[in-house]
Amino acid sequence: RMEQEMFAAREIQQKLLPTGPLKMSGLTVNAFCEPAREVAGDYFDFLPITDTMVGMLIADVAGKGLAAGLYMAQLKVIVQSLARLHHEPRAFLTAVNKIVSANLDPKSFITMSYGVIDVERQEMTFARAGHCPLIFVPGNQPAGLRKAQLLAPDGLVVGLQIDDGTMFDNILQEQTLKLSAGDVVVWFTDGVSETMNEAFDCFGEERLAKVVEQYAH
Image (cartoon, rainbow, N blue to C red; front, side, top):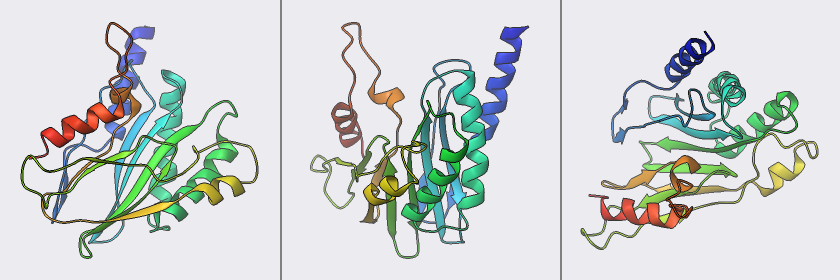
């Protein structure tokens, strides 16, 4: 009975994630999530803002299993309600942190990156709350010369109850990218970069960036 309930929870959780690719003029966006257990704390979403602006979110609740999955479901409700109120990633993450800090277990936290893509202005502004870097490969170079960049502006994890949020606000930085045809941006969680081989070596962010660089075409 317990196993059946866990698989039912997995099915429900998968339905909380976007189904299929994002359809928006000027962008090609696909996503994939494979939980390490029946349910997990990884979460991603596409948050519509205007006809020409969309929010991109990726997050990872500390821990695995049912508890992380429940926090992930709660997080979806929070971010969906805040995305239309705050069009700047820094303001959005600040608002998320205030709500999460007041409701999350003190032993838990969430890493998160949030970006706003404006297809009309052809740019993306993003901020990173302790999450993995973004991988960016510019498209304006010939094949073989396109170099991957790991982008990691400063930011604390979401949900730390260490003060009234002042430290979180002071550390959080935004970064803006001009986008052009052929640019590749990869968002990921540590489920990829911390995968280990038999010798317990992590795959790592640098190695992942090289793979993206090699297959950017």
